[in-house]
Image (cartoon, rainbow, N blue to C red):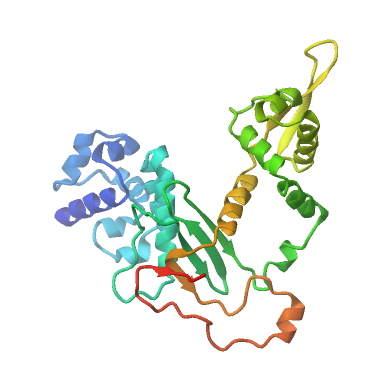
Length: 304
């Protein structure tokens, strides 16, 4: 039994992305102690619960007394893997995790798809079902993924037009606004700037800068304060780093670039995410998916 425990300990430690030194540090023991455990010794019983928790399995699994598949903690495994990954490499890991999850929807007959590397063409992965929608850009110069869980009655109630939404799109329809957003978003955190300084840096007239900044302020993308630098108070602005705004601009670029090449493409939906009552009442219910992703090819391209 000791031998099986040692093998399982080494296996689950490596699967969690931990070295012996890292595992020892989290248990507050020496690396030599972990090495002994993996070579036939048993830890004191007081270490077993914490050890199992770190590795994302039960004590029974460590001792080979039950099936790992019934007891493994997937969320803990992912959390441990992300924590053990250097910060500058975590984004690539997250992309790989998303790609692996999306590939599970594909009815592949051989081996599951693997995240592509060294892409020359602009390549996406897309998922469209009745329950979720997702799009990801896979190229190294700009990676992202966007995942949407579709409610039973669709996204209509959440996406109804409001004055604020219309104001947002009108603001972003202004090329000068995008220029200013790019400039503000490249500045260091908590940097405050006057309208005059921004105007000089972006090469736009002061009146244009003032109008754009007023619109961005109304949307909450910038914040402004009154600063008493001289006898006359001045208004200065800071950028709020709105994550949704950055995502909108990235998605807008992908939307306007016709997606021609898909490395992973799953399309099994019978109705779109907008499911108004009128459409549901008038449209027939399809009896089968419009397209079945049973093809086992590694990639698909879309014709214009």
